[in-house]
Structure formats: structure tokens, C-alpha cells
Length: 178
Image (cartoon, rainbow, N blue to C red):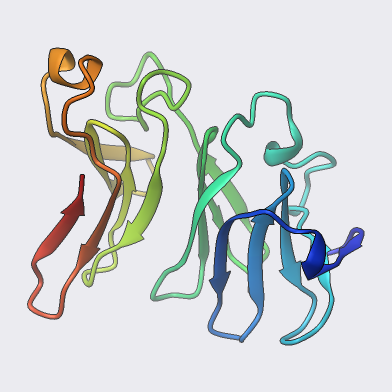
């Protein structure tokens, strides 16, 4: 936490989420805010050890597109810059980004694979949704993803079907918005 507080009346929100502790997280006005306590003031979120958070950099093109809390309590943020994991207990922060030398890394969000959102399945796996791929974080320590492709390049370029979001129902079936 820490930083300037904000008024709800000034927001144009892109993502909003309430964590297990009852604190609300909001991406708005090119900033990420979190309540300093449940029902408290919204303050600008600053990841530990970062003077300028990634979402304040000029190349943070899409802001935070989704906010998810996993089964262990970590907060996951998807953005135009990558997949971010913040553990509020240990205050550890990690960013998963594209590495052109590692095809198993996160897909390049600066390409046509702009990150649309994130999702945790009932097995606890984190997924990233892009227009043509669903990417499952297979090995968080190594930053290894498994990419499931949806359409051909030609279909996506021609405005064909693209992934928008995903959900898992009580029976374990995945629902994909296109």
C-alpha cells in the first residue's frame, strides 16, 4: 500500500475485485488502487521494491485487465505488460513476461496477443486469455506456460472468432466467451 488516496467519484474503472479480506481493488485512471482496509480509503498500490510500478510506465498499454485471488491468497493481475503475482502475506511480487528466446514463456502482449484477462481453475492453475490463445501457467517457478491455440492467424486477422474471457462451472466445464 501507500500513495495518494482517490475518490470513487473520479473513476473510470477497467477492472474491479474484492479480495478475501474484503478490500476492493480497482484499476482506474491508469492507476491500480486498493482499499487500505475493508471499507477504507482507496490508495495507489505500489508493489514492494518498485519505485514506479509497471502500470505507471508508458508501455503499460492496457492497464490492469483482470484481478484474481488464488486459493492460496495471492493476487494475480493481468495487463498489457504481462501477468503479475502479489502475495499480500509475504509481500513478494513477480511479473511473468514474454521472453522471445523461450516459447514456453508468456505470449507477447505487445503483439496481437494482448492480454484480455486472467482466471484460476478449480485445480488452482492460473490461465491468461488472449485473442487467439488460452495460456495455462504450468510451472510458476520456471515461468513455463502451455498455450492452447484457438484460430488460425488468417481467421484472427480477418476479424474471426477470438477469445474474450473464460469461466469454469461447477461440473468442471470451461466456458469461453468469443
